[in-house]
Image 1 (cartoon, rainbow, N blue to C red):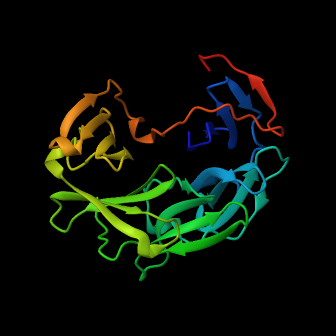
Image 2 (cartoon, rainbow, N blue to C red):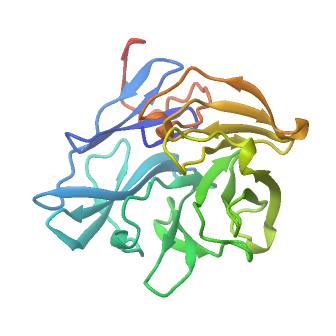
Length: 273
């Protein structure tokens, strides 16, 4: 699962190089996208799923790299309901500069967003992709940003950024109160590390999956359990889930809906599927 939007989940079949949509609330699944083959051996780097509100279309963007020649990349996009993938302007970042990073784009206000290093000398920025215009944009990070264990995430259609302070004793959380307005970056909270759940692997902290303005924090684990903290109550642990496993870090927030667009070719699926 690479994303959730308006009650639809975007599922990626790694073995077949296809994508499909699923609405669990009404047990409906779309047909698979066409298979994409850009090179003899494809390696997916950056990708993301979101909604083009102007044209009422759901789209998935994929940056494909030649597994035998890392300098060769192609950026393609698929609009669900259409027959073919299309090639768009090349993604403005070399995936080799950030090996091993999770590169799923975060969807906000019609745009997919990633934190990237554009080149060897530049600072990190947020690169965005407008799903309607199919063009790229760029936003600066907060003035006091430090590149320490950074995570970009979305909650209530707003961008949040969290990273360790210079001493790596606290987690700093910033919120962009108005999308694309760099001046709207606001420091939301500072969380001592000892309030965060440590992962089973040394040096790995859990990070936020959801955060509210009222100090309720849902932590996303790397390999351990989901936890809910009330930061207004001295960071007390309110709940610990039973979820545990190697895929726990791939969790997404999902909102139920009855979305089923007219173009959406669907069929019923069982709960087990």
